[in-house]
Length: 477
Image (tube, rainbow, N blue to C red; front, side, top):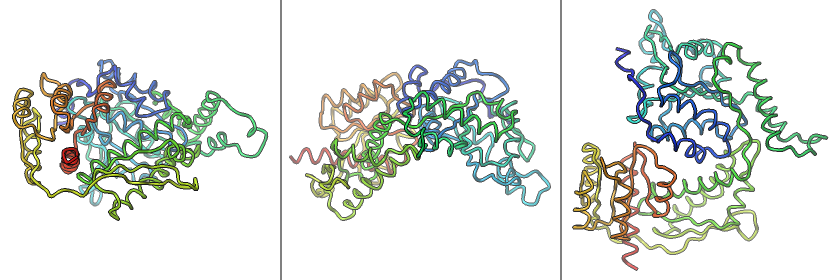
């Protein structure tokens, strides 16, 4: 039974190997050491040269909070499987007592209620964390230092032999996994090294390289005090994350602003609006959001307080018309942001919009068609590029939902063709994998939003409605 669950060999990744280093560096900025340490193990697995009878790679990620440890694992999952949720995550804060080991592996027979104790680590869960393009599962033990000693003893078998025996005497094979441990061990000492406060050392400016070496020494010392030599010796790479530089924070700010705009487009649908931020407002967010102690999390909180919440208040009060542009500038007092909406118009009377859906996945195609038809859309369906061209040139639908992979055809090239022929057409791309750097730039340049599979039907509805509203607004001018 168990052997039938396991695959016979590594499948092709969703993202080509040559792109993995670059794309991971874009998603986890300022932490090149993590990329250099982890990616070679992904390459070894993809090439079939990973070691047998043990996990494909075991990593301990250390460093101050908010520097991107968990984000690294989520980014790898997104690149390999198309979704950052494709991770088996174990919150070790839930396993601080010795008896809580049963929640991880299930209680053995003979214990009262053992049948109701479902283990958190099963072969099926590992399989569900993979994708059609890649069968390498990612397992994350978050804040491993909080786990009881019995948990770390249990993990020795996984790290050494790649096997875990559950309470019902079945085994779980971890040979096709990357295992990550994150930890805040030594965080206080790291903060003292970053911000020494009053004293002679506080007057000495340390280089980035010196600081990284100092933090690594502190982290490794804390690890050796907390974990046994047997546990540490089974870890393939220990990566210490450095505090984020200003340049890295600027890139994170750009990413978070784009994510906020995408969130507006997806969730508000036809009530969407665009966001424009002045350099002064960007500098204000950076000054308030840069924190050596809390890392990127402080920047996210700053964006939430200073930008997302005021925008939500304006929308709730009806102060932002659909299709408007909200200019965000530094207020006159320099202590808060000024949000000013321009343009937009009330939604016109609803009429039946049309949409062309192109996907060679027959089941997904008709599922989307059914969902959109129930919302009053006129449906055009195509399963390949020739059918798509015929429907598009005959009907000129205002919105097109295109799958990136169409057998031997390229959905991105088809999108460029449709936009050239009908500039007002709103093209939405969907994909189960990743795009190369060049393809992502093309999508941004031509304003092609991307839906990563799996996605909610409501996301498609909101995005399609918002894009149709753009066409209607442009046609009314």
